[in-house]
Length: 574
Image (cartoon, rainbow, N blue to C red; front, side, top):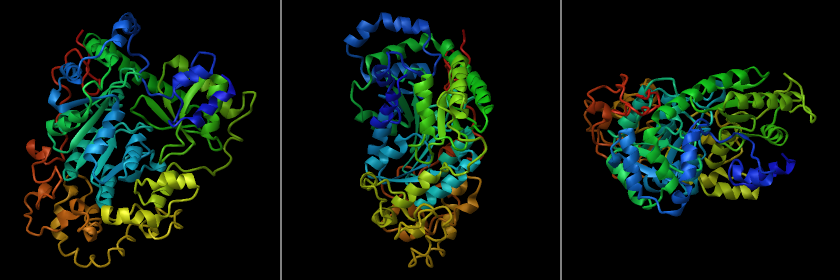
């Protein structure tokens, strides 16, 4: 593949050029795709032949309405149609979630899927980014994440399970605890776009749990699971009010005829689909073992259909990516543009073993110098200077104070950092204390010390109120989020911090104000602030008559004998 093809990476607004663009710029044959996380075993060749035979009709005529296609999918998955909204890909649904349901702020662990950080920032929301630490394998600690949300006063929380790009996985009972603990937020989104590739537990999806709650949305993908990224379709599951609100904004024909045809084909191919998921899981284990044998390459545990790898010291991801493409016709995802990651990391999609052997051979030649252009790693086991996996987010959080401001793009275009002082007004009244570096608010110079500057520093900012706040503190101690999380002692400390901003930040600090709240109903004491949909009612744990701490009963998608359950784990009936 010619060297000039790699220039397409610099000219595209996306992380990688499309396969169509790469094919046009080469000799007509695209590369082996380790970039786009797509199921390589589904649809089957016979299904593709059937679609090819129907191509003329599919592309000539209008599709049915989205309601008709949604009803067919819901019949297959045993979900009530009133709790489902189908979109033209998950990105369309994320866009409407942001416009309709994210009022002021959103928290998300990083690195993660880019639309969860970029979309709210594009509409001027504050994005509170919770850095996943490279030292802990990018694992998400839900208790620390919840404490971060409380300290920031964030109104919407997002979890991707498994997470993209690292494939990190959270067990169902932990996610249910988190949803119960966040019952007072405007919204909790659980993005399960890659969950059907997981095999860590039998029924990890929380779709059934989401329908019981007034403030939870579960997002699911179809294109990734069905190996059809080109057909833009996905869906969300929520209580009827939330799902209906999103559904009412979608165009009548937002789903195309290909999507309709595939959805109506699926009921005849449940067994093949289940087998394809099983094969991807087997390939993931084999691929992880082969990559782990390469010197200096770190492979992180994954429950997705991709693997997150750290290149050896001295290897630059863009160089490795370009050489794999031009010398070996292999396309990989270099993660330097993901907030919270760096160019030392690649995301590699799980593919059949014959393709993996080609990838391993290419990496060996590019990294260790058995190709004509020499090694991408100067010398094994030498050199220690590289960009930390969290360096990018530390810098961004410091410069913008966690506010997903439109000025970030302007600052980047001007080639100078965004002064923290310009972002401070958006965060002070709207979000409580800044992310780890509150002391740097007036001055952007302390950027290198965002995590060292401890959270106690924000306390001096709200000097007028810290003294009165501790007095009512005994009441909110048992009121807010800790009731479901395993570390309740961590929450009382952040509670006084949003309290000083109570006048402009009513939704986040309101629990600290109402003194008459009785102690016997910890999850929802005090009056419900205006516009907060999840306060003042029973949590799903209370509906089930549990304390929210015990493991939730296994529920999947009932009655789907001929189709895999929520995680794709069920066996076809024949």
